[in-house]
Image (tube, rainbow, N blue to C red; front, side, top):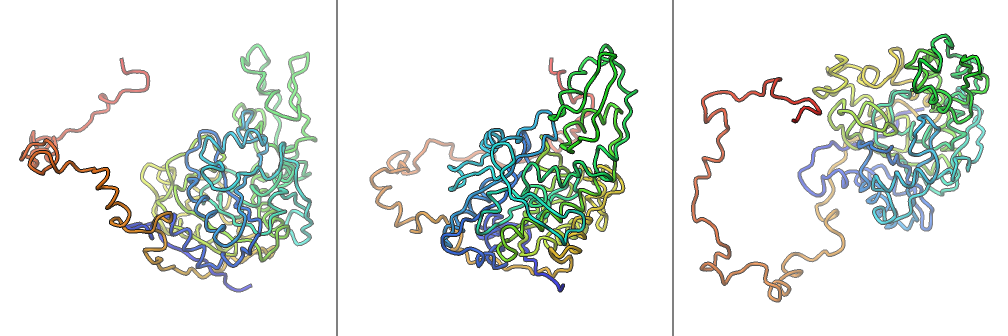
Length: 473
């Protein structure tokens, strides 16, 4: 397999045509993703709508602008995400009802998007199609969300970031996890796998449970599993039906921190590999020549948008990328992050991986020290999904008039001359034609002096002057 083309624009902006929205559309066209859309095609725009209280997910304006472009091409766009496995006892996207409410709270609705927002795998996450992948490195089948598989064209609009399990959250993860149904996610997460599954590989320490009397919130240990696999018997002993574990991840944050189970690193490594196989299944379901990829490498948080919070970005904005190859586009983003310096105060600085050349995601995003930020990429190269060898093509900015406000192209005089005569916004008849009551002259320079310069000292906030939360009285 030869080099794949990855089209890129940096994140600097000084005009309408260099805004990040405009750059997204410019690289979309430069990568010839517009050629994927035929008249009347149903076009899925796969995004991550963000967990409840997450704030790093892509702003809805990107999906809206892309949907408008698809409509210009004659396509029928819809924006979609899928239900999650119950990786938290209080997940906000576990059902269609949950995900629609969360998406709307985060700004994704037909009103903002100009097209429907759809839960692609149905009400409970079982609306899917099984795809055989004999060429898969680990997986030999996958379960792709029905609405994605049924689309004529798929544009994967990805917020490129870190991921605690996948290490990177790029185009491959957006399809290899986000394009799978709920049962597809259990498959990718190694549910029931005899070697790599959590049930098989985790080390159970029942003695770490000290009884209900010594565990005030003991109920959550039983209630964290939607399959009811954790139970406390009449002798106050904890039992885990590990052979039935589906790897929903719901107990990870409950039993792991209590020392009840050692979370196995091999499970995470296997998932990283499986993600690429599942992404291949999505391409096979839609059509290998009908899928395009856009990576927005902005607000690059160390955790996925499925976290219910967002940390300081680990590197500055890296830019906007587009390609027909998901392996190449993720590799280009990882390389760009490695070349970049880390953000001050971020997890990269805490982990001392903030220098150019450091492997940012392995240090700041991975849950385990031995995880690799290229395992999914390497698997995608191995199974034939794409190539990690790429040519990065910098795209020139578009013409200024291309991205001006589209609803009224007239210049200001044509738009407002008659209106301003009828509804005069400037009171020329007041204050000798100056319009408003203001001082004629003030000492503006006096207002520009910094406090420490004015006092010939340095105003430094001492730690004792910083109030801790709750100390404001």
